[in-house]
Image (cartoon, rainbow, N blue to C red):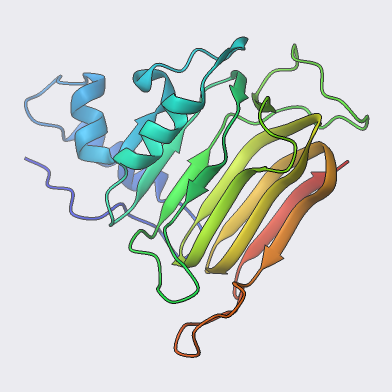
Length: 218
């Protein structure tokens, strides 16, 4: 029986998809491909398994929060299939503070891509994974709370809906990867790299050795 002690990376930036496919082929008992089995063994958490609808009408916030909460400290992936997901509360990856490092590392939030849109709003009919804001204006849609290692956010469209101040804010990320992300219609800041105020001197305040690619902010 395949034993999964840690979600694998081929290097600091790239999810080892070949390793995943090999383990799926070796699953025991043979042919057991139930979502519950794969989720348990692979540490991949599909938000639709937690009740997300993705119809652009239903508030899917709790499904995302529950999927993120299910990730163990060793890491895992929250996956959002194509759809428009209404979000009304900040999605937080990691639990780092100004005095402590995150207990959770190697967290990934991955969607299914989407069409880059050179306008101020993003039509819901575009294929891909869209997170659309419906919460307080002063909030942020996604926050990374480090110091944290190996965080990845990828293949998402964040639509602030002209009703959100901040799209994504990152505190003290190391060896992270942030790619293929479109952030639109945020009133103050689309993407921010931050450090905690009053940070303890023994805790790193650096955002270092991260990779940012194919990010568009409108």
